[in-house]
Amino acid sequence: MTLIVEDGSNVPNSNTYADLATVRAYALDRGVVLSAVDSELEPLVFKSMDYLESFRSNYKGAKTSDDQSLQFPREGVYIDNVLIDDDVIPQTLIDSECQSVMAINDGYDLFTVVEGGFIKMEKVDVIETEYSETVGTRNQTYFPMINASLNPLLKATYLTTVRV
Image (cartoon, rainbow, N blue to C red):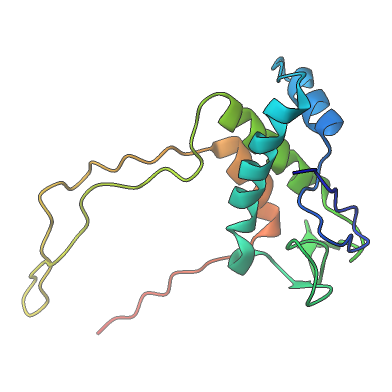
């Protein structure tokens, strides 16, 4: 399958934010050499885009068109309190794609299955909590560079504590 770059103009059937030259240059600037064979690198880009698209419900703003192929371009996206034009693909998103490709190239699976225990039930007075047998054995890889690049594009999440 051929890469079709979304440039912010709502390119039909787009499937990436970065072309192969951009991905390779980004990696090379960081001392990483990716395959010079397009057919070997393209699947990594598609996997990277699967990962970026998995955040669809967490991205700020709204898609500029109901029929666009990817989650960007978007309207109403602020980065550092600056409104990003709705015909621009944020550089931080392109960087996230390149970082994802590098992680996949290094053998990481961005969709690692999380295993392990979670609280099932605990009892404090009338409140009960039970723990599973495998508490603390989560096997999930964390990608700080990818997450840091994506963070400005994601909605803030807040936890509310309610006293009962």
